[in-house]
Length: 310
Image 1: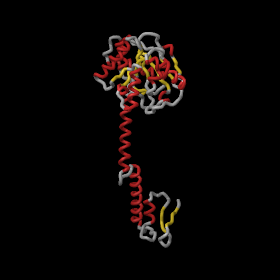
Image 2: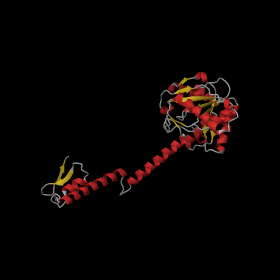
Image 3: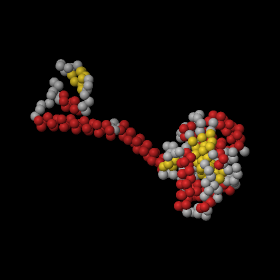
Image 4: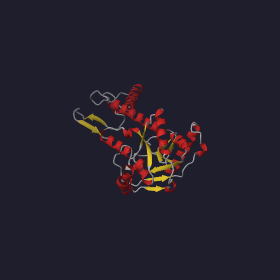
C-alpha cells in the first residue's frame, strides 16, 4: 500500500516532473507473471528511477547495509526501504548467498517482478563489470525469463557519495526477455550458470553502451582502495622532517652527481676552480643549483646580494 502511495502520489510525480525520465522498450515489460529485471548499477537512484517506468510493482534485493545504518540518515534509509517492501540480503557469501537466493525465489513464486543487479555493487568508474551467477541460478530455479535493463545517466545525476542529485534527464532502456528454459534442471552446473550470466551481461553491454571489464566490480574497488592507501602512505612519508618525495630525491642526487663530475673533470685537466672572493667555487655552486641559469652571488665588496637572472 505504502509502495503505491510513494510511487503515485508522493515521490513519483515529483521525480517525473524534475528529472523527466525517458524509457525505451516498454513493450518488453510483461503485463503479468514473474520475471527478473537484471540491470546495470551506476547509482543509488537506480532503484528509484527503474520502478517509475514499470507499471507493476517491483521488489529489489537490497544490501543489508541499507537496513542497519546508524544515525538519522541510516534510520531514514532503513525506514524507506522497509516501507517500499525491499528485501535485505547479506552479500558476504556462503550461507548468506543461499538466503538471498531463497528471498528472491519467494518474490518470483508470488508471480511478482524482481529487480537485481548482477554486478553485485555499483560500478566504481561507470564501466560494466563481470556478473555474479546468482541471477542465473534464480532464473533457472524460478523458471522465469530475465529482462535486461540499462540505466542511462544515473551516475551523472547522482554519483556515488552525492546525497542531493543533480537535476537532469535520465533514461531506462528495457531489452527483450531472455529465455533460458533450454537449461532447465542444470542450475547446479557452474559452467551453465556462468554462460547464462555472461549472456545477460552481453545484452546489458549492448543496451547501455558501457565498456565491459571481465573482472568483478568488488575486486576493482579493492584495487582502488589499496592504491589510495599506498598514495596516502607515500605522502605521509614525504611530509616527515628530513624526508622528501622520490622525485625530489632523484633530482637532488642528479644535481650532486653533476657537481662531482664537473669538479672531477677540472681536477683531471688541471683547471683551477674560479673563486667568488669568499673562498667558494662559483662554478661548483652553479652546478649545485642544477644548471638552472640563476645564481646568487655578492658584489665586489662581498656584502650586497646580487641576483643574476637567467
